[in-house]
Length: 272
Image 1: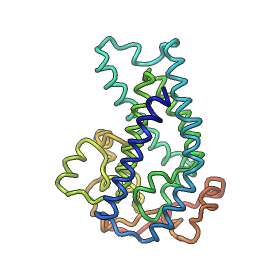
Image 2: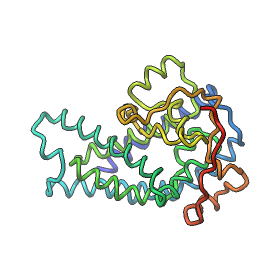
Image 3: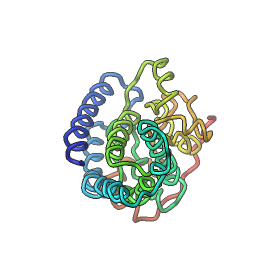
């Protein structure tokens, strides 16, 4: 199932999306970059290698294994609902995405989880490559939380894999530095997370970072009043105030960052 769905179909789709977005953000830049683009590409991809490896050899196999086992255990909402299959699939898909909204909040609010997620937020620019800048420790932690979500929703195998492909595609899209037509993006943002919306989440201003946690569907933030969208992209400074020195953000330092003493978030003066 993993090979036939994720490897044969999912991987080429995600590679194609990456190439298209890379070209678009090169030609249609939303935010000005403050670092060397190619240096960041190298750093972000090397930092992401352990997480990528764990995604394929640990995370996805574990999610699929739980879904397979659950065919016998019959745990979760999917096995309790007496509705058409398509409606079950839609409900479970929405709940999987909602669980990731909650997981993202926990990554910010729980100090132990934040020390790993911090690696992602220390990027001083925000573009497509930031979508891959995740510490492998965060990937290991996600196995437990997202595994529980697979069981509680009773997600079937195929849906687990389809959701993961769409999850990865959405993550690439909303991290990209692509300048979409404003009115089109405003309309699109009613349903899904867009680059302007997620750009605010990576702001150096704490109350802006503490907003826009959604991954695929943007309405989770609206429902829980964690949405913040009226910030001009030119006003956003990306990163974490306590880790604003580019010279510190080396590959080695980023990989060992979660295992060091984490600096408190410095206050950043802002009228917003």
